[in-house]
Amino acid sequence: MEQRMKEENRDGNKRDDGAAFAVEGVDLPLVSRLVSDMIAAHALAVSDAENRERKASKEYRQLLLLLIETADMMDKYFRESDMKKDQLGAQTHKWINYFRGIRRKIDRELTALGVAVIETPDGKAVPGFHTIIDTRELDGVEPGMIVEERKRGYLFDKAVLRKAEVITAG
Image (cartoon, rainbow, N blue to C red; front, side, top):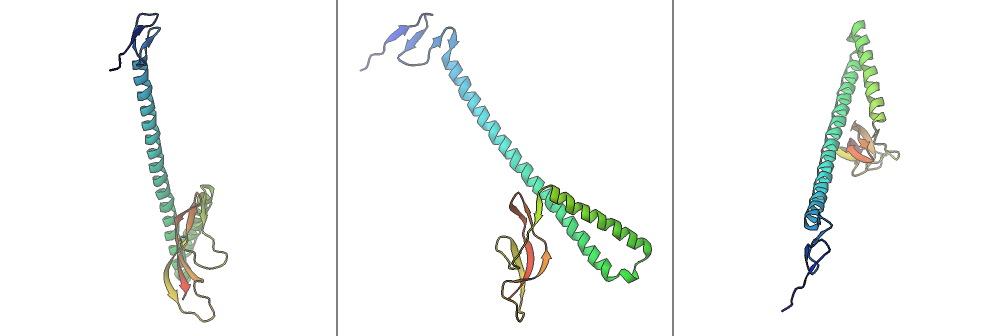
């Protein structure tokens, strides 16, 4: 059996072969517990901050999507009013133009916030960026080519915020 040696430091505090001991009035076991508690508290605070950041980010993305949906609704009403423009009075045309200005402001604000429209330079639907909601057989059009965009797609922070909903040639 191993015999443990006890020795006294210069303050008279006992030490047990490398076990924690007090030095110059400092209670090392207490300091060790405090440091451990501080590390645990820091880890918890970082975790809480990350969770708050994730939640805030999710809520921010939801607000951006709400703004985009509002813009979509405005576009729908503009298309409908364009079809009936001969039936609308002068005051209604003024109101519609006023709301078109608001719609343009929404686009500017989305751009300023880092939201970008998903572009498709080659005209083909790209998995992950587009949701194909229908296909049409069209002569002379390569399959997979977008023939109509029903809903614009958007990127935020280089990630897809909302996929574009498209109709492609089949």
